[in-house]
Image (cartoon, rainbow, N blue to C red; front, side, top):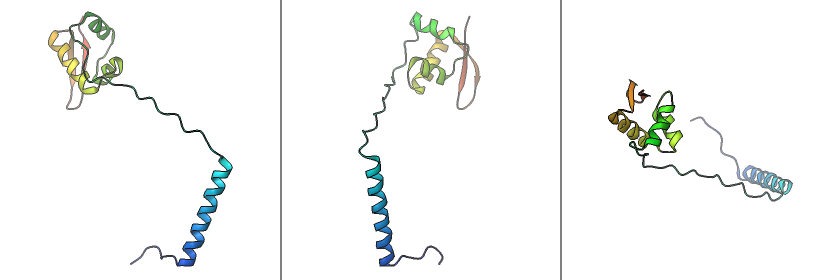
Length: 111
């Protein structure tokens, strides 16, 4: 019913010609640019750190609040691995659960 009217052949040729000229002028003006630098991808571990390692537990106890995001960014692991790690620490008694919802759990280190 409504909508934009179709262009005639002559109008489409003119429009295509203008676009080609603009594109050529832009390339000529810019010259040849160097390729954009490649983004460095950081490797994220899937395996959580060892919950029985004393050094790791000491690092965790220095943190005031433990969330899966904080642990994952600190130890460079995935969020799912951080959740497993925090549940292992809770079973070992190194941390205790403070608050929980359907999406996030908040822990604090035990003294």
